[in-house]
Length: 295
Image (cartoon, rainbow, N blue to C red; front, side, top):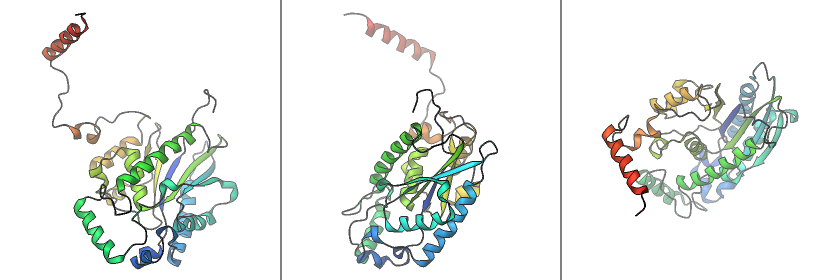
């Protein structure tokens, strides 16, 4: 991209969980079928087709100055996410889709290989005692491991945006749709909005084919509070402070610092004075002067 070319930000970044799978219906499916090969149920297919129509309604709500819209898809390589995308795609013409990319870093948390049902139940009980974010499944991953790979995906996503790899025409309004899994999507939000581990562990999972919309605000920040209601955010497990931050982001200028956001600063300290004491300032200045004098 030319150094003088302005970065065009997507209007929306939408995260969507796959439709109902055989594993959602019966945990025993994981004992004989690798996780990545788990199929959608018929209901899951129907859910995905209906979600595609809903997605189209959302992204077609364009601004008057930009009546044209396009979508770009990222999809987990698992069979249930790719099948979900196939059904979602029925609602979009080829003209509307800029492209699609299979992205391994947004795959499901790895729970190990073939999963023995009784052992997995005991393992998940242990996870609840240990903590959902840091507990690593035997032969698998922790949510912290998923965070690391999703963070890498986000860096690539921003490079794509900054270099205008996804937006072929500046007159088009771009929507990124990420078809993934419940935990990976929650971790995505955690990384994007700088939520803490404690805040992450309070979040509720997505329902099958539920999607959540980050929309670009008037100042250039993304917010969940533009498309979604406060009640929805609370039902997802966001605290009132987190909801307040989303509302602030809806109109904040890109890169601004939300001083009222407790987990950015105050949450890590017992107490911080608003200003330095003048005597302390003088002592620090004197120490700096003395350290700069040659021995």
